[in-house]
Image (cartoon, rainbow, N blue to C red; front, side, top):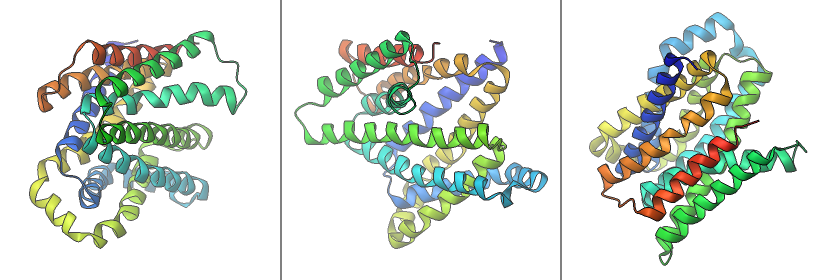
Length: 285
């Protein structure tokens, strides 16, 4: 794996953890999600529109269907992530949301597609499950708010799995250009978030007044982190890029302490390490 690819992945993981910190810090609400989605659309528009004009894929109904389906799942994803951060610690919600997706990939491959899953993948899925238990039971037990945080984190992970499968179908099977596809998906997301934002327009005013910095950071850093990973995948195998991405969990652990004063502790550290190790194992073939 080249140094350039490593740097792209590490920077992408750092940006991913950082924009999630901003999601946790912001008051949130439909207005906040809508505004940072509009920022993302504006940020991607110059390059995205040029790619669409060049490729002409805007007229392919399958391309539009995939982008719309991904956008619908992202509505669930962003709302679940936001509610999870509202009810749970960042150091709990972030790694669980990140860890559920690779675990579900292993289980889904075995049950839905009857794939022969290597033992290392099953061990990895088990390690992720253990990590989730350590994070949820040790730190969230005894409070309904804590349990809600864990539940919403799991739903976030399920959403990540779903939109990842849709995006993979678009990019691999339909051979969609990643930048053009991602831009169109962002446009659909903005459209889908509009009714809720307009229906609760006070949340838009509140977010614009109180969370301008967070809106800009999430709107720019989120697509940037995604595109950096795509570029890395053009330079190195996915089997190397995917596990290295999980370094974002360690960044998340540090962010929880630095920004929110959350104590790491041995059990929480063990849970994070277990999830990160499991995510690495599920990529081994």
